Length: 149
Image (tube, rainbow, N blue to C red; front, side):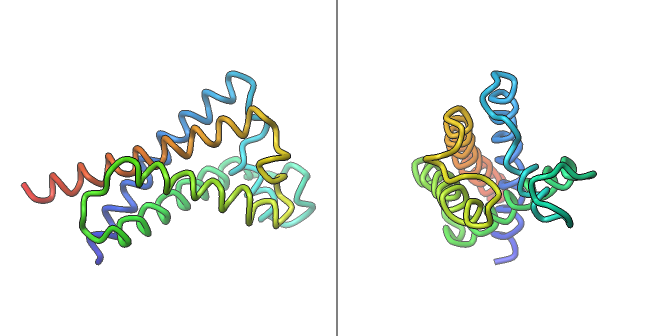
């Protein structure tokens, strides 16, 4: 179990880095507006949740990678030593997107639900979570292959 958690967390960090590259590309294309991790961190810090705060960018990045690592660890425990296929990773990544951005994020009043959010951000975030799920499976399978050598 501990090996699954570690492999999943490492894979989740790598997948979050890949997803972040998609988000940065979307930002450079003018599609993102403010990044959701930054908005989530802002809401978690003391004071009005919609006013910029010192440290929200760094806290957002740390929280984003922490959440990605946690989701990766959960995925690895659920697949329990097996080598999952890419479609499962894509579905998992999109499920994280849906649960987060249709569920708890708008529920806390941080961002609107997907259907009312910026169209560009919707597209980038769906693509980013697809990349997350893909990279998660690829990294996890690679770590598990190397572990058997």
